[in-house]
Length: 355
Image 1 (tube, rainbow, N blue to C red):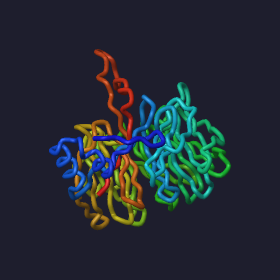
Image 2 (cartoon, rainbow, N blue to C red; image 1 turned 90 degrees about the vertical axis):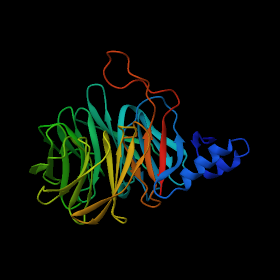
Image 3 (cartoon, one colour; image 1 turned 60 degrees about the vertical axis):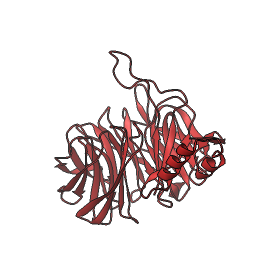
Image 4 (cartoon, one colour; image 1 turned 180 degrees about the vertical axis):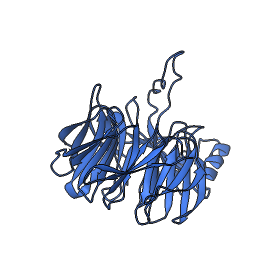
């Protein structure tokens, strides 16, 4: 593919293919155009992001037309319309992801520090840091409950939930848990749903009293990870690292159905207007699974498309339907070493898939 740079980002587009058609071999042009013109989800472009370090969650602010990408030392901000990097919120050591509260013009970033955790609060317009609030060790989840005006984190170190007042930045309540927390979602009716990944459990929590109301075993969903929900019908959607997507009744905890997905899932998002559920998995070469909610208890696979190895998180622009997947290539880990290998220099980018 041919890249053209603009404002620090490299973008692949249909026009760039046409511009270089004079010297690209005819067979290659035919193959690329066939892929881009095929029905279903396909790679629209790729946005390169500088910085040879890890990544985590992405969040699309459809109304504000910005994409926030957790990129270890910073959260990178991308213009959804132009596909270009427009800024960042930095100064961190391991910034996981961002949540947006437009009603307060504030964004919130979950951040793991060497021996603690915190939430960075920033201005949505200027991207300037406003404050930093201490929370438990290794906060992974960051989400806004608009009913209470609270921002919730769930950390894996101290195994607790922290509630922060989105307007004032004060943290009024902390609730201890007993398990490795992962993703969560709010029904905006006074409840927060949270996975305990190591226990295979789903919690329903009172977002005002910060009290666990229900604890449900959601087998055969093993290692529940990514989560979103259909708030109208009280259906919780979970990406399970056992290799399935699960739909769960948010009133009873009943597992309605499970359907196969790729391994290594780490993000899931529901588009209520379209009735589509997007699930990203980084294993087995990387895949994007798209399901359709035919009815609250009936689901079908729309398509499963290959993305790129390691593309485990995603964000959906609900205006265009484009799906954004951050990913970079990693070198093989050293012999005997634990964890992932180092990021290949210059390889971090965001894939943009479109229908």
